[in-house]
Length: 131
Image (tube, rainbow, N blue to C red; front, top):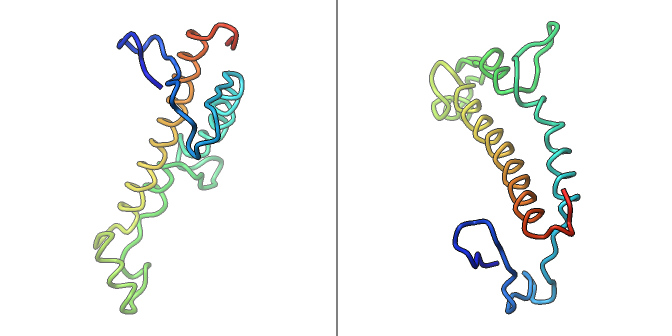
């Protein structure tokens, strides 16, 4: 796709674009894009919010900080466990896991935002698609 205006408000399909495999034409369905974003949003509660709820550990990034701070002895004392423990931190095996899990959670949110932004642009530039 090319932005003919250069300001992000108008997109046209490159007439020479043949799809990823050379046979598929580009098609957008704003309704499907919004449905995918809504579906993904329903799962955000599982990765955002409190670390505990009614005495149970949640799957949120906060739960890792609340409940997954492992020490070397908890990771294990055999050779491979000790080596792994050194890669994740002497006193907090959960900190590196928290860092990776948080980055993944942020990527999920960014993907949802990108889908919504693309749907907004396409709906605006192709009124027949609707909102």
